[in-house]
Every structure is written in structure tokens, then in C-alpha cells.
Image (cartoon, rainbow, N blue to C red; front, side, top):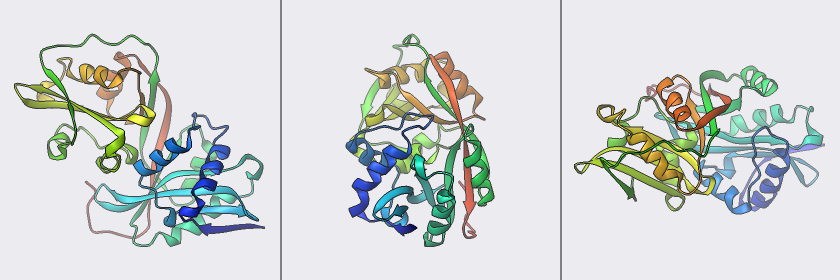
Amino acid sequence: MINYRLLSHDDLDSLYRCFLAAFSDYEVDMQMSREQFQQRITRDGVSLEMSAAAFDAHQMIGFCMNGVGTWRGRTTAYDAGTGVVREYRGRGIGKELFAFVTPRLNGVEQYLLEVLTTNTPAASLYRKLGFTDTRRLAVFRSSSETRTKTSADFDVRHIENPDWQLYRSFWDGYPSWQNSAEAVDRIVGDRAIVAAYVNDECVGYGIVFAPAASLMQLAVSPAHRRKGIASTILAALETPHRLKINNIDEDLTAALAFYEANGYKQVLGQYEMVKTLRESHKPNK
């Protein structure tokens, strides 16, 4: 008999082992060390007390990890990973995990997740559970070790603390949960930030999640675009390795073209989906 319950810190090691087993045949490489797993759940704001797992006797065989925080002005739970080990699939365990955990997301206004566009069964399940598509997100990987030539007409500096009021003024859209300002603020010891300056005025910046060499944000002031600033910031962040670039809004066609011009290729797409749990009078930002 399969049993379901919320998690605690005592379940962390079992959750890590179950995560590796559940994603061992995933389309994206999700294998990582125990330290990297801890860094990932810190970035995602995972609350074990609002996460659930499925057990066969005492063995964890499925899980639903939830991050909790504010996203676009609303209290949000984020599905930071849902998986079932291979031999237990096809029994409706994923559906039961959502059915168990959703009523226990106390005080949360909306439930957010991403699913690969190629994972048709999962996307169909989420829609049946009441999630609606909000946008499509692109995943890029390096297609070349050749980097775009950079400019020396401005100064690139390493920064300790982001200036969010300024940085947001550079945005054309808004980041995904894993790349949000809140995620950046959760990983103070595991981030790298560089910014470009013209006459001591910050005109662009980029942020990397260092443990995964994953680009979180890159933006340039509209008045200073097409001058090689973004390429120079990207090159500074790529040292010594090229980056993983996840969850770029596919409607931001200029951003997609920029990464392609800098030697990256879109390899996957994701649906971003949201389910409203309780109505809010706050508008999305």
C-alpha cells in the first residue's frame, strides 16, 4: 500500500536518493552531488514542510518538492521537482501526490510549475489538474566554444550585491522562478554577478548560479544595446566554462537571437503553468 505524507528535514537524504532515481532516465541530465542538490533546493526556496512524498512501506518512491515565496506579487508554491521512480510509474502516484499536497499549501495563492513540451503525458496531467499555460520557455546549450568578440569601450566589474531597482529597469520581460530576483537573493554564497559601466554608470549586468554554471539573468539598458555590452558580460560570466541557459521567454525574440549569435542553440522548450488556489486582489507584476 502506498502512503503519502509531508516531509521534514529528517527526510532530506531519502529525498536526494529518490530524486536521483526518479530522474535517472530524464531527458535532461539531473544527476548531481548531495552538495549540489542542497544548493539547488536552496535556490528554489524549497520548504520540506510543504513538500510531500509517496512511500511503499518505509521506502520513498515518489516526491513533490515545493518552493514557497513571492512570485509576480503573489504568494506562490513552485513545483521544484516531482518524480516517481521507474518501477512505480503508471499507478497514478504523481496525481495522488498533487491531490495530497495541494490542500496543505496553506496561505498560498497560486501553484507554479514548468514541464518539458516533449513530456506530453505530464503536461496533459497538469492541465487536467487545473493548471493553465502562461508562456513557453526556451532551454539553450552551447553549440560552439567560439565566443563573440567583445568590446573594451566600457568597464566590466564584479559586483557583490545586485541593485534590483536599477536592474529591473533593464528588463523586457520577467524571469522564471529559478532565475528570479528572489532566487538570486537566496544564493548569496553561490552566485557570480558582473556589471558593465560607461562613465561609472551601470548599463548592464549578468548573474550566474555558480554550482550549475547556469545563467540566471542578463540584461542591458535599452539605451545601450547593440554595442557589444551583453556579449562582453556573457563572456565574463562564461569564464572558464560556457553556461547552461534555462527558461528564456520564447516571446523575447531578441534575446533568443542574441544567444544563438553567441554560440548557443535551443535544445528544449518548457511550458510554464499556473494554477490559482485562492483569489487575490493583487495584480501580477
